[in-house]
Amino acid sequence: MSHYDKALKDAEDNLNSKANQMGRLKVEYDHNLQKLTDSYYPKMQPLRNTVYLSQSLQKWIELEIDWKSKMLAKMDMHGPDFSENLHMTDERAAIMATVQPKFDDSIKSLEALTPDDMKVLRKYEHPPDLVLKALDATMTLKGDPSTGWEDAKIMLADTYFFSFFIKHAKVFDKDHLDEAIVEKLEDFLMSPESEPDVVGKASIPCGAMIKWVRAVYEWAKTKKVVGPHDREPVAMDEDKCKASKETLANDVEALTEKLEEKRKQVSGAETQLQNLEEEYKQRVKELKTRYDATMDPLQETFFEAHHQFGAVYCSPNRNA
Image 1 (spheres, rainbow, N blue to C red):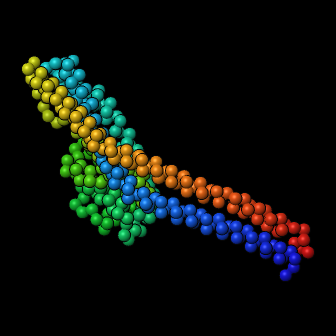
Image 2: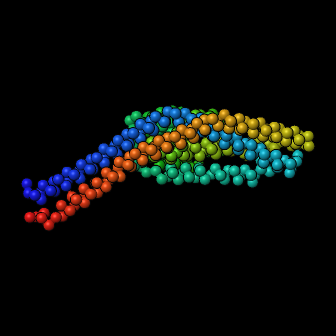
Image 3: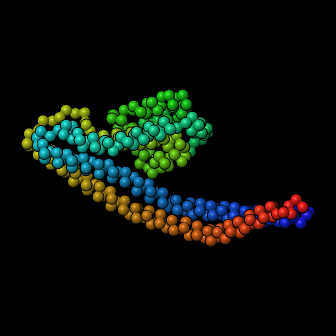
């Protein structure tokens, strides 16, 4: 072996050695980070579920309080002539206008899916639990009698999905969703794992479908509160108007107490979760600091080895 060949081999071996050290260090860091995450997940996830559920329930209580408070104000204005369906039109439109964009966005997500996306999903022999839950929610909303994986694969076929499902989703009757379906959907939708971004990590199509499910669910829940309701207006005299106002005021008071109770019940879990999240972030930061303290100097030696290899490789003596 010539002097040049030996120098080149030594430089290459040194470069590979540094690269291997960096690779092993990265693997070690990833392993330790996963261990750290695994140690905190069982502590944080039950608290996340509790907080998410409570916040979801609080949201609907707050909507009821807001709506009934607005009704009280309109009853003061119109007296016995007040009609919820008639005199709350502007307030109803304003609230529903906050929900409509979510439905529109869910349709765009469905339309953005490709046959390749669906092919990846259909390849599952045993889909992850989160995928099955998302498909179950989608098929439940559609009113399918069976929601298992074999039934889902029929829905996921390109011909059905792109020709029928999306078209059906666009014109789905959001205004008359059966209460039993709403309650069944809540078994999944009241969990943080039902968020589209979370589901989308397991399956892009399922992330889009659950976005649509959540949009329809939110529309139906909101419509149930604000109406218009399919009932004939009730003629009121002064006494009936006064009684109705008292009932509404009592409802608002009871709902406010219920909301405060929910907030109190979850405050401890929120504090625990916040403390654990901060502790976890600090532990991750410390781990990253130790990793960087070793990796940064190692990267410098790698760059030096790379420079040395390049210098030898491009040496004038290369062809000597």
